[in-house]
Length: 450
Ligand SMILES: *Cc1c(COP(=O)(O)O)cnc(C)c1O
Image (cartoon, rainbow, N blue to C red):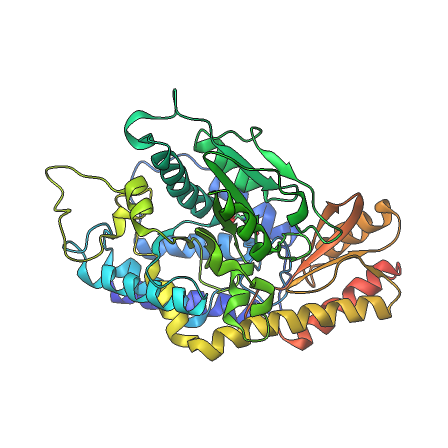
């Protein structure tokens, strides 16, 4: 075991050492080689060392350099050193992180991380929280608590009796809500399309003045961080109006909730603390390895009511917090330990510096592109930049050629009728030099000198 783990650590270290200088997208040769994984199940077993050698030799060159400093697609965080290493140790521990009495150390580490997170993100300290796979499931989990609470107030027990015959719930979303929010609503039986959509402004923010009149069970889904522009809904104003009508206010803050951790950016997240539930990712802004999302609910009992399991053979009665009372899963890996390690490595000032560095690099991109004569379409308030290189076809050509070039990676998008390239600065590893090197490639390609 020791030799295998040491050689694997050496392989991983080599991968990470080389990542800043290799192509971000894999080479055609590396992609061709992954066909070697298409083999029948071996009849006989192999030496573990040979299994890992095959994985590294074929897999590592074909991996997209998402952990590197110049991946700007989607919203993809890297992996902080302590978080990556803690994840390895967590895998070695192989804890079933369901019940405090079964895995006390893992449960306690997750509880410590939750306490730090509510403090850092300025959420109510008594909130319930769960470690889930990502913001999709965090939205699902938090909205399950919302569904429980608004129906309980109407005298209906949704966990026991389901939605058949239940009082209808009004669900309000912003016109630029993330597509995964609709998936969560669909999984909850609330319907992907059975929503009232509130128009957005020129930055993609839900218009508080356009909130429909609310009565009866209602859930309003706001957003902290638009996936295109990085813009934040005016959550304070929306929450005030929604709460007057007794509605539940949810925040999808997959990457943006972390603005609250920086004294310079907390104003962006103003009013977030007034909401009833929050979803965020740790694998985006916090740079914890996949998969890592977080659901928070002000009324911890509402989250527990939606998620808890009881069975004779499960020792669920506990003075302490049972992780499985707050997540869809019973058995799961102790993914909160890597979150704990990331926070322990960075401290309060380190998380603030991480967020501020992402913003500074996004601003550097926007300034460089504007100086080169290209149109930046959004106010760069956080870590997202939208740029047009002219006609839609020209922009799409630049995006495709940039991905092919390999210096960095950006995706394309359609935003409010415009075709744009999206730059999302989300990695701890990105330096100013990485921004400049990426800008050089973008401008070179846009000017047709690729
Ligand atoms: C990324 C993102 C999601 C989905 O998060 P996953 O971690 O991919 O499940 C939801 N909402 C917003 C605003 C996002 O940026």
